[in-house]
Length: 624
Image 1 (cartoon, rainbow, N blue to C red):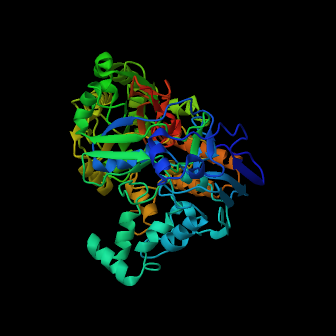
Image 2 (cartoon, rainbow, N blue to C red):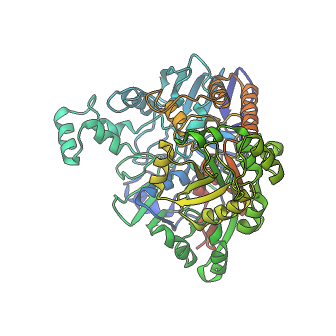
Image 3 (cartoon, one colour):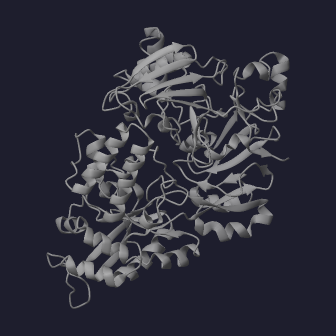
């Protein structure tokens, strides 16, 4: 996120053409004529979001996508990417649902809504929807037992919330809150508003007791709070009755193997050609087994497909282009590492735990990785080798940090292992301090041959160091439980989710803040549970990373945040807590020949990016 350094920042779209006069959507014209739907000029906000890069396009048609699970309904919210604020492809943060934002000292945020903006059911979207969430949801002990989300706290304290009028609210913290705006723009955003007019009927403070009790009984829920949380599913996107601000509205109730999402007639964006977005009338999501999705895509069953496709599907998909009526594009992924090895610093085995905590051992394992061989053999030389670090698309990118301790140097690696006291036995394998041979089990979810093939190559390169690797495939949930409990010594997963970060994006995944960080799960759990579970970090460098992350949250300006990021990246480069193998791999993106508006080049990432979301699928349109 790029913000100028100033006492007061006005975050608003640059002034430009207001766009052409609104054009009625053909598929809604009959309802408008019948009087069951207002004309487009009355459906739009008084100040719509004019997307100057959208159009000229054509209204109509169904966009077909393939998903593997019913819960993938959430992906339509991810792709739709209507947020209070959004990232552009250049990673600049700009208002979207909001008309503008005023920021004072990074601690006072005034949000201005678009006058006349409406929910998908036509009800006004106002400051009351923000008040309802803050007072009746986030601070209700039954709905939110742990209190407001972490992004709503600065120095552990919540903000003062004020309603300034029907279209303005203010959040004031006593200290800077650097996480707030970025959280609003996330792939899974911080929802600080709710459709109050819909949810009140399920809230004990607002609904008649008899009616609420009957609703709880009919839904077979254990309490009113359970029912409210079930229906309050903006991200899950599985409740057709819940009003939304997204471009497409769900109309299918689970369970189903085909989900339909129809255009939101009150959507707030308009193309430069005057057509209300989205251009596409419906998104049709068909459910198929994940292993069949590449074949179904090749048969022409999807108009836009990247999810459940892998790099090793590219050759097969390219062969099917003509018959399937599509083209394969290769976008870069944006994770710090596509494949990384995680030594478990919380391993239950005390000998291996001590070795993994010795940075000489971690550096040796990194220097012993023949990354270039993995790149050539598995990725045809198209990936980027190096540490789990930031990618060239990040404004914080530093090639020297990505390559530190990442060059293939078995001689230096062996010297480090000698220095760490790991002598070789008669069979060439090194001996652990307790006399066991250095046979290291690396556990993997085993969901593709890609990881298995990479581990075969790592096995060969580490054997030259006197360490024998054994790959152990497991079911994903079992794998994670073994890592969390300390039973797993080392695991394979992807690296940092955000390899494209700017200094104004949270560095939390660089510090022990989550159990999902497989190199130190117990330290992360300790943070997540506020000390109720897990263990506090007991190594200097991780403790420093934790302190720096807390300092970033309180930082008073972009220069201070940049300095903190730089120090955290430096620590990771020196300490090699995670052994990145390759990153920036090419992701197959299959695009129907009839689909227009999809960029030829792009990056496919969860955060930032929301997969396709950052490229605004409401701009995509069907030529026929």
